[in-house]
Image (cartoon, rainbow, N blue to C red; front, side, top):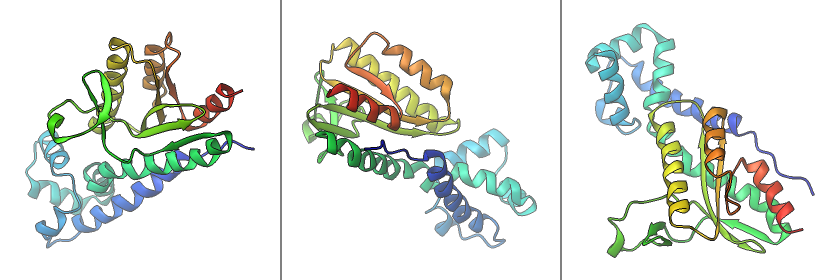
Length: 226
């Protein structure tokens, strides 16, 4: 029974290329329809790009028309799909590793309801606690092993990627300070080995809090039920 190995970088690159093309095709039009264009971009990220370049949108658009390479690169940064594709990719990872772990009697799936940290516990989010600071719980482990999963794909660098690293660090800090007893797995596939190692070092002395890639998580499950 072989461990499932996913080429995360290729999966993300192929999706990213498609997302970039959608945005670039809009930008390369002289008569750009802003209403349609705004539906496919992350407006806040576009604002950050304009601020960094000290340009207005007209200057930015002209640069895209004059320099197609620039247009393609910046399209990847401001694509709305690029910032929202993570949930689908992470769900794909959970489904894929479950094909392996379920044969060992360990089941991995997305929670049926949105989960949050509330009063030092992981609970279903309700209207009464909607103001509580949200911590991402993306998966549930059941069967011969139990616990929760924080699942992220973090490729490249930027504000979105740093937000994911910070979210992971904050959840680890909460788990340590609250003396969380159940398994809490940080399932992270990334090309940033420095940040990944830094995260692993935070949980070095905690048996129930672990940081894994999707491959090493499957190995952990196999070894844990022996």
